Image 1 (tube, helix red, strand yellow):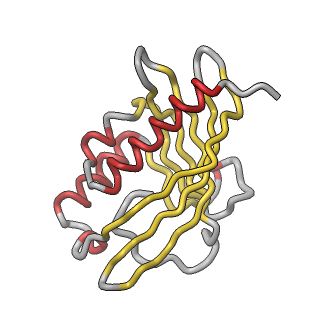
Image 2 (image 1 turned 90 degrees about the horizontal axis):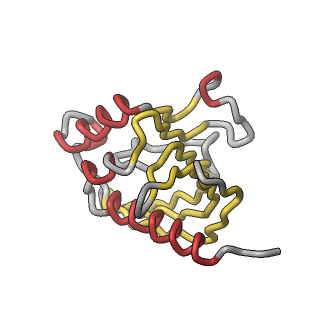
Length: 160
């Protein structure tokens, strides 16, 4: 097995950057990480792969991502009334595929949320399809496979 450590380091730095933007509620900068045709997906069934034909917690295209961010920034959303503090821990970054057009990456995330004095943890497997740019990447697809996606999920005042 040959591992391109330069590539792993580069995609890891990108994923860490995205996590930091979300934890610090820098949503406009987060939006700029995306391709216009990109999809943000949080499925209810982690075995499903046909996301557009099944129920999801989120299936956001460009317009839906912008509307989600607008609700979080404006406080119009019920869930944004008492916005959460979050800390993400990203690990186990693995490049699954690499071509000149895209890099497919899988990693682990533990998202810790503090809201109303209660700490809740959301473990997830993450899948990214990244398209290379001159000096970084853009997100073409981000799939958040929550370990407890089919169970009870509180009102969420953040982006996974």
